[in-house]
Image 1 (cartoon, rainbow, N blue to C red):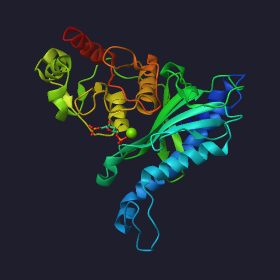
Image 2 (image 1 turned 60 degrees about the vertical axis):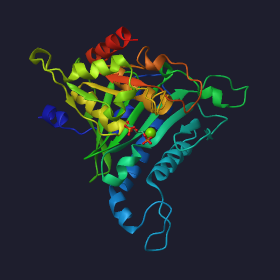
Image 3 (image 1 turned 90 degrees about the vertical axis):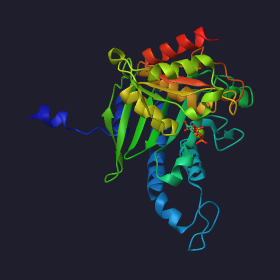
Length: 338
Ligand code: AHM
Ligand code: MG
């Protein structure tokens, strides 16, 4: 019957974006175009990530391969792919990337959007064939066209994000994004080269039994955090403890698991990283937007990450993010042991 045929219909990322845009009669389609640009770059990066093992056999980083060609670093390759995808459609005025110290100007005259990105996060995991990801965060340029485009235009708090997402290059390649109306995910079918809708209203469990933190820096943690990790390890059947420890070391992979299975991911302040390691604008804000849209929470230990007024484009911030019950519990202990 038609209804079964309909229910089996595969929806591609591009179709989904156009359908979503059609729900807003006034929409110009520019944000949709931007998301499609990122989707295309993601497919190209995914292909290269899958080939990385073979490339490694031929020579790495700045060295030359057997053909005498120089081999590009994968993170720089990802950076260039994303920037040229965004450049093509002329709607982005500037890009701020982990790979570039300053801002990258694209269409500084007419471009409406400011894009932050970490083109290939978790790059230390490339060498060991473990999941890595790309992260993006999109803002509108504030209407000040009289003035020259400056770095300050990009210093907007996370609550002003108009869209954010990530691509996880794992056992399959998955793109997850939000425009503030819930969280959708797409799985890349490499045989046809399309992202196919897999989930269109992701919700994080209220409480989870997985904690994710680099315990190597235990000695320099705040007392409240030490207490929380001990709490996770206590045996208590009723609250499903002890929790399970999982830490991949790729933020995108650790957060994707947290989104699906619940629990908490923490990158706290430590002696080595007094402000935490992760970057506010292209790691913490976009992941916070997604987790909040899925019903979770993200704080810096005290306050909501997305309300933080940024002071510089590459600044770092501690992060406690995940299921609401888990984040509330660690906050309670942090407050108690200040
Ligand atoms: P990178 O941008 O150099 O790849 O570092 C970011 C990564 C995150 O993906 C991950 O959560 C974190 O670093 C892990 O850091 P650590 O090895 O200190 O636990
Ligand atoms: Mg990074």
